Image (cartoon, rainbow, N blue to C red; front, side, top):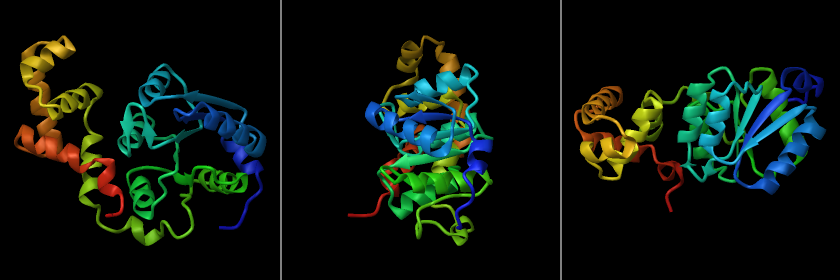
Length: 231
């Protein structure tokens, strides 16, 4: 965990995408990345879908920084979708929700690192040095090598199953969770009812379930709140 020269970060990570809906925090983090870590170009997105759109449009950042609470997604589902879309780009969670259980789950489902929000610049520098060297960074005491070998929790397994859904299938599952039937979903998405049925069949196959109710339970199991400590 020794500090390494900042040139390692500057050489490997030059373009960043910040996904956070708080403009002032985005500005402060952008300044930290540019002035403190030598990252040359920083782009921001205020919602997950906005970020996915610019990534689909050809943006290729060297690193992505993601908040867990966004207007259109809450929790680790956004992380899973980003990792699936950009499997070779490190995704770093920057969040105020830094409970060890959340940190461990984020890393186990694909995050390259986890930095609590409002950490001092030195913490970001250390995190990026580790990530630039292909290592995992987490707050001290929140994650260990033994955690990587522990069986996945039911919530983590649910997140990984959900990551296999296409964007359209994820949207259909969301509508199913809202109680909509196939005919209503077809109208909502302007597609044929037979197409909806085909998607529902594919969703159940990918999730390893036999019914719509079981699919809804999988989606609920992946809910962010299931990863927080019991109160």
